[in-house]
Image (cartoon, rainbow, N blue to C red; front, side, top):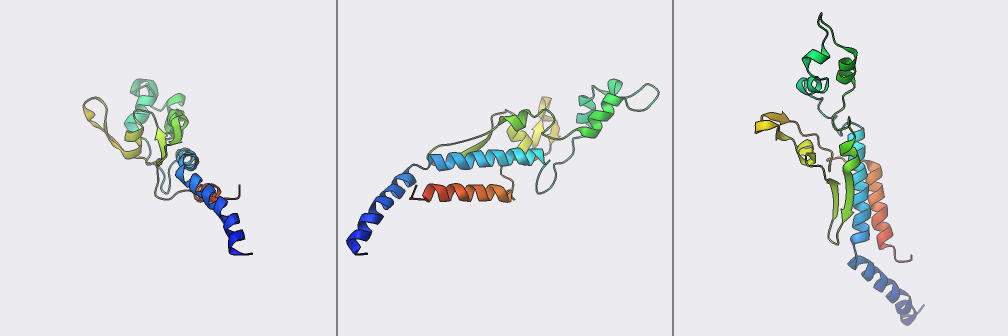
Length: 167
């Protein structure tokens, strides 16, 4: 194959690659969706690499309706309160946060997270409640340090698909 034939073969492919590289939004959108699903998986498994900190006793008691509704008059825990105490899962009980995770992109970056007002507080931790007197521990679900291997593979495949010229 001579230079002219090679140029005729390669030039259209290079131009196609250049056009694809100008519009990064489709690639970033795929990456954002993968990362949003990764955040959902982090919530579902209860945290990673370490498990989320358990809910505070005061939180569990409030969910059970307070001491009068949680405890029997002669001592002991009512069945409903026992179930709440035993099965409570941080960030997962109502699934609101889980369902609110979304991903999107612009031409410059992948964006993912939750539109819930309290999502930032739940992720990073901080002070909450009336007068900001309650310390909420951070339970990082957006962008944990150790991504799931299958998510890294999906992102790598998306990048390869985007750069593949022969499509």
